[in-house]
Image (tube, rainbow, N blue to C red; front, side, top):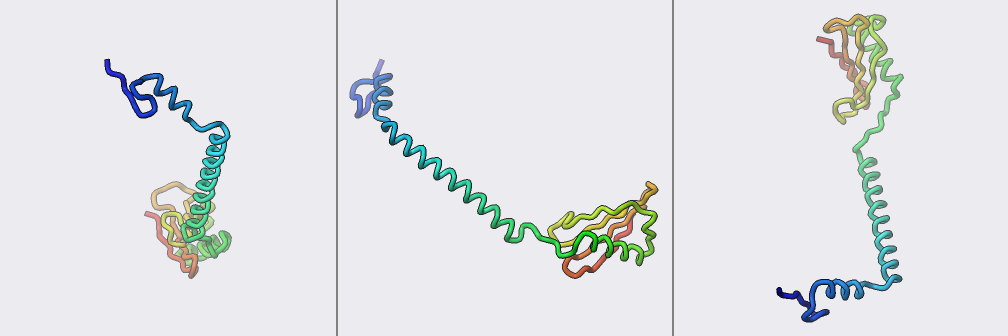
Length: 138
């Protein structure tokens, strides 16, 4: 059987090589200093990722609506009545900002009190211009 060797333990192998490598490990104060440096780098990485996430959030990933929800419900109700719907026949509307796409629109969904096909309608409101569009149920 052949023994493995290296520069530190010429002609010897196995446990002797491991023993010498373990003795060559830095002293305890050096290990503590390295551990402190690693913790500092880890903290910096965490801080950097948090700052990156905040920049993405403030840079347009999330929009803040201009219109208040009560204002949106009022405009949707007026648009629905103008289209011929009687709001008393419908449940409280479900209101969502940017429900399907990040296009700065409000979606107001009216579901009929009586469950039957087509007894609902949707009002889409542009947050910038307050323009409304009514989509009837099918």
